[in-house]
Amino acid sequence: MHQLAERLQQSDRLAHRAEAEAREAARSLATESEKKEDGRAALEFGSLATGQAHRARRVQEELQALTNFGRGPVPRFPRQGPVGLGALVDVSTEDEEGFAERTFFMLPVGAGTELTGPGGDGFLSVITPASPVGKALMGRKAGDTIEVTLAGEVREWTVLEVA
Image (cartoon, rainbow, N blue to C red; front, side):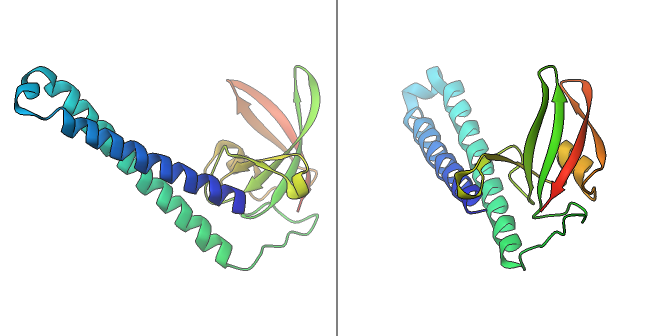
């Protein structure tokens, strides 16, 4: 979770920097003579700044949700237990290239983020209960098969382990 928090904080810093730069660009175009020529550009920079401010607020909300989740007890999942928030889930996937294993980390925020596994071992893909893969995995147990639609194709994945 620490890696995800660091990435969210970096995203927050970038959003705030982009917002400040866009607001400054909008102000610099706002002189009386430039208003006539560059009014549209000033509006566009203002809109960009507003969008970056929304992005920063959303990241702050995600950081707060992650912090709140981390304050609770560390979830423990028995090998045969169902997938829930905080679970590491290994699945067997099949595609044109054959079978592969993927590991997912079910968290309240951060869907799509790739993290380094414990001890630098492999990669984890963060999923949330609201994401398509998260919805398919919630409540599943080792040995269950789920259907996941990727790029318009339905694929069957098998849950190998829940930890």
